[in-house]
Length: 295
Image (tube, rainbow, N blue to C red; front, top):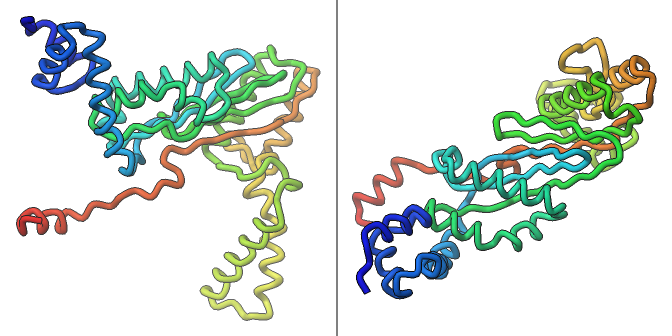
């Protein structure tokens, strides 16, 4: 049967595949548009598999709340150019909304449910696309959220009997912003484990030796630094970014007193885009040398 240019154009818009590939797909399935999409997706599986080993360190972090439920999702691609495109941004938001509305508990569960969509976008944009990390939360109290330009996503869980009070809603937002900026590691001093303390002590010792401090002074200085560690890495002990005269613990207490209720921070979660991914560093001179040498 004859394949119209209109059908080829529509299939290309749906899949991002090349004109000739679209025409061939339509010919193979006798002009059935949906079957042609599936045909191209099937062929695209091999392309997607080849991209699986690539480094996908760009992308976006999406954070969403819906009442007592919330998610933070990191979706990656290979280049900043693709990450800013409408297709990728829309896909990441759709994935987060799906995870939220279906109460998906893990990123593996999400990837399994959306495998076809991931493969389709990989084929369309020509880059590895990966849903890398998912935080999914439900609460009986109040969730606060903050997203910094798609690069950092935060959700804070507050235990409170005044979840509808404007001051508490503002507190949840402020603490979320604080977590994004101050990057606490633990909630309170009681949560700091001995391994973490030991690693920090080793770093302090090495720094002090580099500074030329006398050996007999180093241990005393290290103990002093460890004593101040909670203020640096524990959310409740950190100075509030909007008012350094207040610790987060005091901010929470003052807000609770103001609204006449109880408030405590149960947990906080933060995802930084690309955290832990080793990005490939391209050397332009090496690339040019390879091209000119025929390699």
